[in-house]
Image (tube, rainbow, N blue to C red; front, side):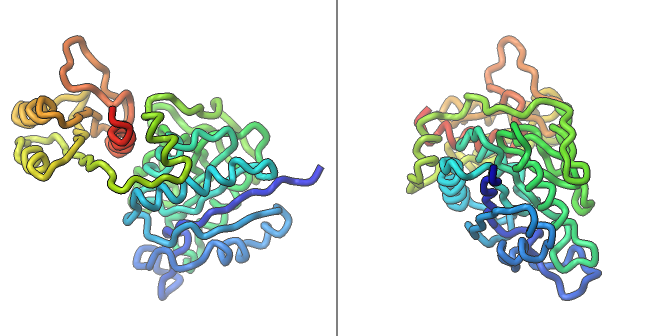
Length: 318
């Protein structure tokens, strides 16, 4: 039986970046090399096809937007619906990879693999990590039984629900916290250490259906993240409320604890109709709810992923 297609969607990022010197791994310009060029520069791909490539965006992922997300989700769903497509690989920058992964997880809920590939070094580096990460991502997308949204970096497979960037420059920049990785790619073969992640049903279904069918909202609800810290006040919350913010995620300390002044401002905002979620700024663990909690918790989502969840809920009018 002939191999099914793997679709490779390009969005830019460091993996497509270039620098003036091969020894420069941080002073590069992201999103300079097209996805076709990236694939053509990796000789093993000639034996791993067939492939379909498409440039969905060409941006530094620090500049990722809801509009690009909506366009990307529409293309992902388009290709997932094709019977001759086995899986999708997306080249992406590392800065907001975890957010894109969660967005696609919530909106697309794929029964096939959607694999985000990245790099911490530009394509012009003396020893770029992008080609191997892209090869590993294709191996994941080709794996029998693979499903859901995952990210592959430095040979490790991370679930969209758990993946977080934890280092500023090392090539092994991602971690899955308490949950641990889904598995590892070892010389083109997969070693799984837990089951493939499955989509959960918290996100607002109306918003998901709207975005998944290519209907891009005219205006995305504004949701911001504020942080609890020593000496925190309610000033930022009050300023955002005055600007018409519709949702607030607070990166709380410890198990969702808040400075009393910040908590008072958040309670006032919630009473005025602003949606509020408590996440934790701790890398590992989650906020464990206690009886009598007035501010709801994020159910284990990190602050940036809780923000996406709240945006989807607000789009649906929840």
